[in-house]
Image (cartoon, rainbow, N blue to C red; front, side, top):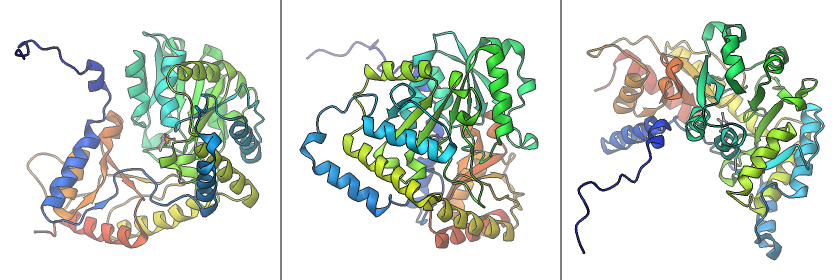
Length: 408
Ligand SMILES: *Cc1c(COP(=O)(O)O)cnc(C)c1O
């Protein structure tokens, strides 16, 4: 066998560098280093639900998995039964009426849809309006599709709502779609229907599709029920909305979600995906059907909401007692915390990255630096409520020591 040429081609695309996954890999490395140092790490970095779906959902999944007819290619659009149940749920929960054949498509998690939508509806060189900070796949999907991001800064003083009037007409004209996410990851903000109306109105004036990621619609607290973008009159003419069963029903590992709304955009995504995958495993769709049926029968928000509400109270109150001024979010599984006032110093200034890295190294608590979600995330860290109340209390105690510099 001969030698590889010195000038061997690089088997890694330049695009990968634009995906921004590096900080998560880095936090994982910090975590492994802390474990190697003997810390028992409390991991509040990842946003993956730590509870299983309900018993009846797991039973539906297992029974369906035993059926011999479940093993053919399921088909990209999703089973008629799944789409019908998703339509029923949208009507039950939001009063939105959808045609399950044309206005709904099943997804292997909304991540699947979010990563492919730009490719399905944009041409290279188009632009899209996306939040900063935002869920990483939003800008990664644009990079994959060769679409230029126009970032909308989310500022605390505006309640983390984009300032629509600050977006230049020229940007509205160039954008093919605008992406919003309420309740939001990472900033844990909520939006009222009036914002959705203003967004729809602006978008209509400029022919822009409104894309809403509603992943946390069922994870809200204090009786608050997040609205749907599709509730706005005429929304089906210009909006689509992602609904995920990952957070709502603890089905993150099942990979199931759907896109609902405008039929041209839904159809474009379905057509693209028809070339890529052949749909969600039928048994998983059955689990999704069971989860939505159960939620409708109970006519109450899924229990996941109550669990995270208690954890939120426990952690926020404990952190406040330790002197860190964080606020209680109205929804999501995240605390978006402005950096604490540190009582000790390093050479050089504190920033979200250094605080996260040092917190892990000194007291074994993992959080994500805000800058991982975009430049406007600097000055914050994201803390995920993905541990038991006892562990959250322990984490708060350790964080208090970290802030005061009480560690060896
Ligand atoms: C967790 C999450 C999702 C869900 O992704 P799935 O692929 O459906 O598991 C979507 N958007 C945001 C903002 C999230 O945090």
